[in-house]
Image 1 (cartoon, rainbow, N blue to C red):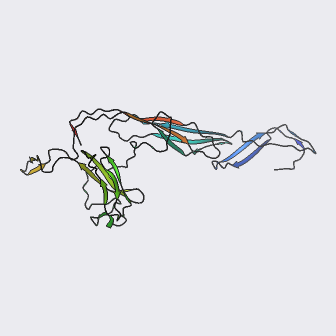
Image 2: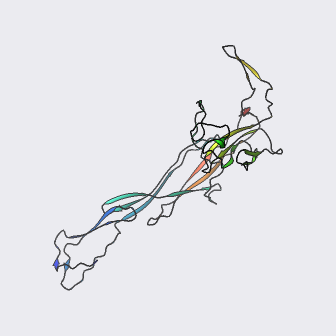
Length: 292
């Protein structure tokens, strides 16, 4: 911009003030410089250059990892703070910066955006102590038909294996062509005692219903125990817990994965240094005589 000014010697306290709103944070800022004592001479052009060097941008990425997991696994939290601080012009503003995580199981040689299969995120579960009357479906609505797909908004999209306690216990998990049944295979060459959970899900990958499957050589009705309560009512109980598997020596080796956090490229900012922590699950050698 060009201004026509009267020739003069600028008095004490004279200054140039530039007000603007920066596009990075949408924050109003004011840049000021003192020009007292400067002489504006007739017929001369005086040039002032505006610099944003007083605006300081600093990116921050802070990550706090969880403690080690026991062999049983579990759920723990970690924290990520990712932002850029823009200071200057009479204002300081923090702007969130998107971040992403990568995983390495070979000591940082290779990194992948996909986490290991054993590192999972489970949704919140109930206590199992509530009796529902009437029974409700995954939408919180009353179940009106024993066939899931006949309830409103309950048409399944697919079927998948949620977990299994033994390798290759169940394979070929899928939804039938008519979307009415769950299908899976238990191969005769790999069948052994174990437990698994399969589930059907909707088009948004939300589990609608699940089934717990117990593969066992126990024959129902064999070795039943008779229990009599204080009212002299008799009850028959199986000699083993539901899901019981006979003991066999298994060692759960320690496993770990390194997680690297990276700020995504954002116009106007220099990404902060990457942060890395290690998720570790301890080794375990079970001693129990059986398990469920």
